[in-house]
Image (cartoon, rainbow, N blue to C red; front, side, top):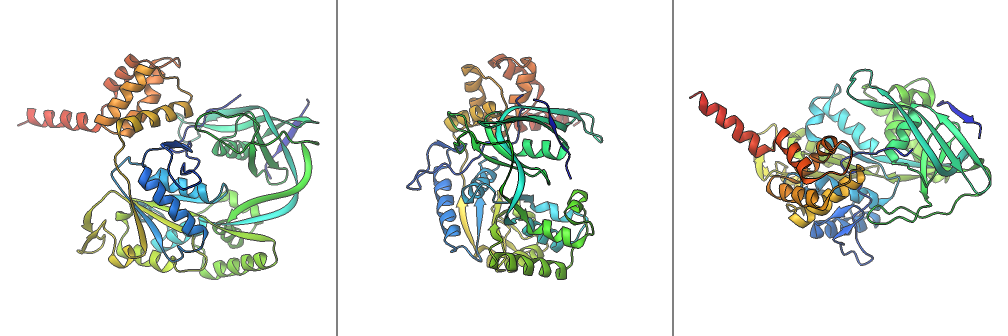
Length: 441
């Protein structure tokens, strides 16, 4: 059990490529706002995704999936994540790459089974002792990664929770620190921490937020910080599989594993979950399994996924690719997007387009705010131009180096230019190598 200490009576950075995505940014009529929920542009694709969300909620996408097709850096992952956010805050979102199934220590079908079951949640409600309050102060202590000294990881956290009637300062270990980082908890947020398991959940925020990062507005809680109340949390079917496959109960989740779980265990878990649902103890939360670079899947994997989609316990399957006509891996057959036709017939296809300059400008502005980097107008405009000429990802990747060059102060155009000199884009890199090759001829 994670250790939580009460102590007698700092904001951290969260950096993730898509941590700013809060939904699809649609209005009440399903029309896409130019900027909304962290999304920018891609109006047609987002509106199509909004229709797909309605189909999912009405149960009319059973046995089908979604295919996102577009060039690299056109927001396919962001749209997939936006769909998951629209379905619900605690809906599981599992992201894998098509090539991952060949590098795992387990069989391809076992890897896909585990991914599918990680994307299906079981929402359980029960009475528990919880620490609940507004985050008054938060301070995460970091240490060097034991296997990579260039990376810092959370070691512990000291957090002060406040209600209208009480205030407590807690010290907790690494597991809770990781959860706080993953959820993006910051000062002003209202959270709950399970006193027994250490599970953290966000209730909302007390702050009047401006701009793009809207969260559910809630009032400051009343009563003591430590209280007994109904606590709702979501575990995945894969979590339950692991618990049932190993001795030691829920604590065995900490030790992970690459073991293959047999179908008998999974059937037992499924029956138990169905019984919980019938008794009103739990509800099923089908999540999203997002497979990027799906053209890397072979014909066996596609056959397995097509059958799995028809299962009554199946998540929403979203595939993404940037390929046109290409061979289906493992065969000599050419097919659209490298996907067998019988699988394509089960997919709703959504196209994404390259970002325009004004869209790149807004995305760079969002990423700068998310990473806590102050940008001058001139630097922002220069990055937007670079993104249009090279790629959106290159422009975003220059933010952190430019901030280092600026010494943590406001990033100016010259800082971006200096970062551009140090780090080449793909076109300049290719030209550099071709020039060297020419010298050897």
